[in-house]
Amino acid sequence: MQMSAVRGAIAEAASTVVLPVSAKLTCTGFTPDAVTEPHFFCGEYSVEFDRAMNRGLDVVELTCRVLVGLADDEAAQRLLDAMLSGSGPGSLKAAIEAARGAPGELALGGLADDLHVMRVQGYRWYEHQGASYIGAELIIKIIGEG
Image 1 (cartoon, one colour):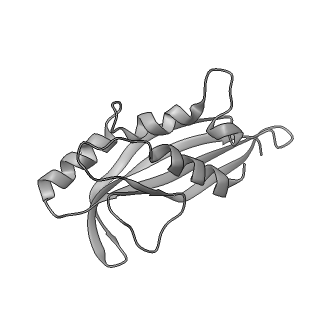
Image 2 (image 1 turned 30 degrees about the vertical axis):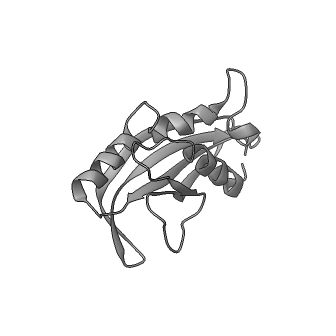
């Protein structure tokens, strides 16, 4: 798998969420220097190589973050909660997993065999380039050819 392309495709899928307020989610497939909030980005990842013979399968665990501004603490957390829900138009899980493709198709337009948003973690305050945000991490498992 070419991780730069995979991360870009995941960011593109995340950008399809419909937020419950007039804000639009900005998304990047890389860790940005600065964010325009609310912002989703693909961060660090780990790779388990050779899960099948002859480089047949690698398993990637990708950590993504979503950061929301603090103009209003309660409103920011409501917005974040909507994006972290398991379903609905504002759900990052639903938006990202829609890129799995139809049954029998490869995920992310052929960049991976499959993916699954496994969990949310780290719901807390984050500092990014000197600014504070409320945010959380989404852990995505991606499988594909080595």
